[in-house]
Image (cartoon, rainbow, N blue to C red; front, side):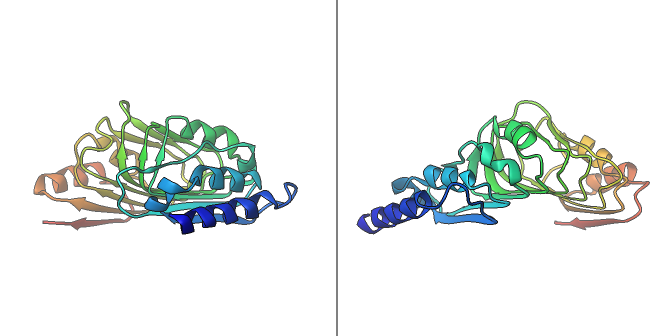
Amino acid sequence: MQKLRKFESFTISLLLFRSATESLDKFRLCVNRDCLRVCDGHLWVRRGVMYCPQVLEVLTTGFHAKIFRFPHLGAGSCRLKRLHLNGVRLDCHFAEQIKSRCPLLEELELRSCVHMFQEVTSCSLKRLIIDTLGNATKAPFVITAPCLVYFQMSVSVGCYTNGISVHITDSLLKAFVHLRSLENQRSLLVDLCNVPDLELRGFQTKVSLHRLVHVCSFMLQVVIIFYF
């Protein structure tokens, strides 16, 4: 405990004494959740964003039940090009912050996160990866990204039960989708059926094969991997 307090004091001092006029190329915080119970991780992240980084990574590890709640992005996110979050909780305002405060964002990667928002909208986004631990949305999950080139999504059973819709253009060249169940996800497959390079993984029944052939009959290339 005492060592963690000393480390927290050192880190805060290091961030506070940096000139506010200096910008960062990259801010990366990798910390165990047990440490976050003691230290003020919110202050670290907020202070890091204040320096207008182009890359922001917040990665939490460990198995503590309380997932780190990611703080709201401030004005410092205006230069952000890459945002990578792992093992954090995102509230319902996160999507609006991405839309209005990150005009240059090109890469968004969310892994093992719990989130409360129901859309991702970005005119600059080129690469999107969502590997969700859980979600609490009560409406269809909608992704609107007209410049998207690469899309990857992994959906656990019980997540996004009201379906997923992806609004894209011909810019999308590759998509990788891992669905544990086809339940309520027909719209997602229809939206992606014309992607030149599409890989589908995780389906478990022969009924799924019949549906996929019907939905994806016009695709240029499809890779389907079944688990029995």
